Image (cartoon, rainbow, N blue to C red; front, side, top):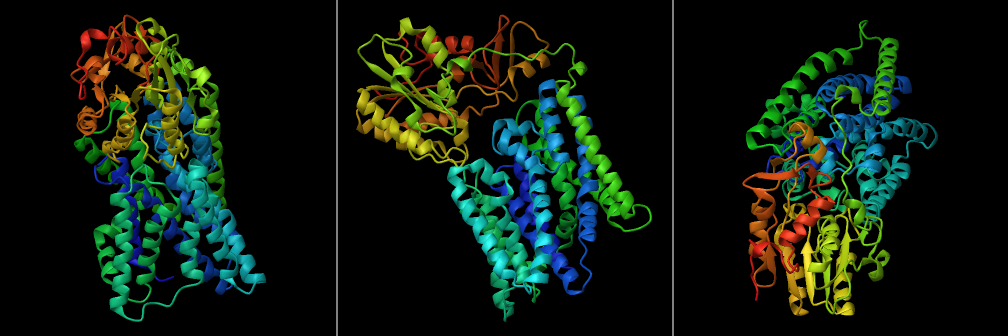
Length: 626
């Protein structure tokens, strides 16, 4: 196989956006697409080697898996080992128990399935899962269980009619991914059937290669177009972009075009990608990918907030240093076929590593996250969320508005006028307080809330495909129930990449309906659950922690509502400067990282909820409409 330095440079183009995105560097909201570029590269490079072995009569499934083990296992288990040591020291029992579960899944190359079932790539909890990024390795290894066998069978029994088998497979996988974008978004992101087309795209460049560009200028244009597609995705996509599906075409086709353009000519793109520093980063890319995410997670866990710009730079620098150490002293020695690590010893060591990591993870699970490490830590169960009427008035991702019932969701009653509480979990968390303040609310408050669905008519999320229909139905409810007052509340930070100006679609519709609208701004979010904060602050009676929310988001919300709503800023009541009390007189005011407990919701409603008759002296709430 001819070495192509530009492909190592392309690996650098793939890994650097991922690292910058996870380090919290602004401007790289689509950095996660670097994984898709990796899939295409992997499909191309490994298929090229398999085809060469078949054509030269030296194909061996054992040799193939030996190469995969040498490439994947040493650096992976080196990083898992380091990650486990740090997690054992740093993580409190609940976090370590979760880590233990993911460690078992990672050791068995099933972490994509684990995170599909118990997490999401963009969920707040994902920021404290140091093995989350191993989902992509699991996808690749699952793919390579089947691909070499399939290639052998097609070569042997179908006379190498590659397109007959692999093109339909790629198209079917892509169609499934497009379909699953709205029907099963989390499975679409994590699982092999909807990701296989990306690897097969790289494979088809080898198995059914298009004619190489006849002119250098044409090859230059193709290569630049491919690089442009990758950069477009990196710089314009966000966590709200429906993905993978159609959106994954840009980075995947971009990678394919870059690879294709360099098959015959030394193009402008190939020359740029062959720049030695880029090639070096490309050589480090596997270890860099493995190293960067645990470093970012541990920094967030240590500080319990998002990284500052200097800390983001520290994440990148530390990742590069650790990646070089791994590449130089772990990757390279194991990739050499010599007497130090012969095949039998290599396989035995790999099996032992998998068995040990699995056993260690199971022990961590069975012991409640090695709870003996922190005998004075007590995991808190704080009342609050059980009063949201989950699956009835607070709908989950698998539900539609048809599962909501008016009779069950009128949480106050006995009044002439109806008011609609509309939003996501950051609307639902006011419900316990509304119930306890019913005597002070002269409305029948009707709760209409759904997980991950801010009350924005134009909102679409691939993770919550039912949100649009849920929100549109709110307008029908307002008409049917004669609602004249609407309170909007949400986790507005979920809109920080999309822009809070999207609230205008809802406000315009409510204005045209003649409805009086209140908009409650973003409330507090902490960098961890309150039981972790409580332990960090010494379990004192009254404690506060820094707010993880940029207060600028409430300024932006207020600026965008114009005269269409009355704005209420919760942070004016909940925080002093950057510190927000999470525990007062021994009672938790939050049930997790930001949702109110029953006590917290009661305090909040009585302090600033807009339709309470005696809310605290009226308020830093700012009125924009008479």
